[in-house]
Length: 188
Image 1 (cartoon, helix red, strand yellow):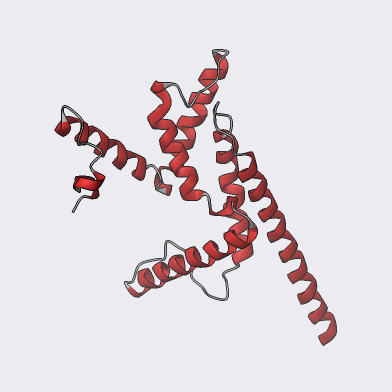
Image 2 (cartoon, helix red, strand yellow):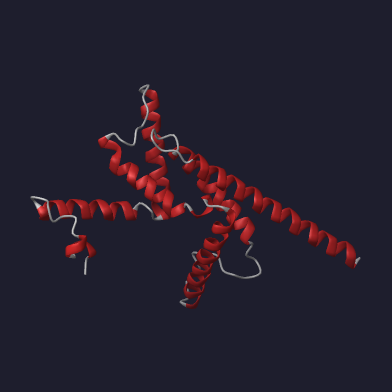
């Protein structure tokens, strides 16, 4: 059952034209959710950058409280939430990374078993979590930087955490390389 149809959750109960309002809000929710799909990432980023540039060219700012911007801004912020795991503190980020990678690896195995090429990384000898995460952090960082340009949105703490997590991955990679170099020297 649709949660919004339960009496205790019916946000539409006091609306005059319930059917029209429900349809409009439902379509908005669907669009917001679909915009979290990574297949739409580049189009969302492109649209955001165009809106930010247009505002700057007009000598104004793109403001999240402007009614004409609200739905798109919600879409962008929901996408940030969906990508936001690497913007958490290291310990929280690592907990969620383990869960997400388990899901990715499972999906890859199902795809391989079905005779399809994996769309996600497999958990095999060739997989390097640190490099994978560093690439992802570098990939999403510009998006978070663009979002923080929106007037009324401040993601500086999230970007700071993202940067710290990237540094931590680099440090781990350096330490691992030193350990492996030490093993090679010890075996000669």
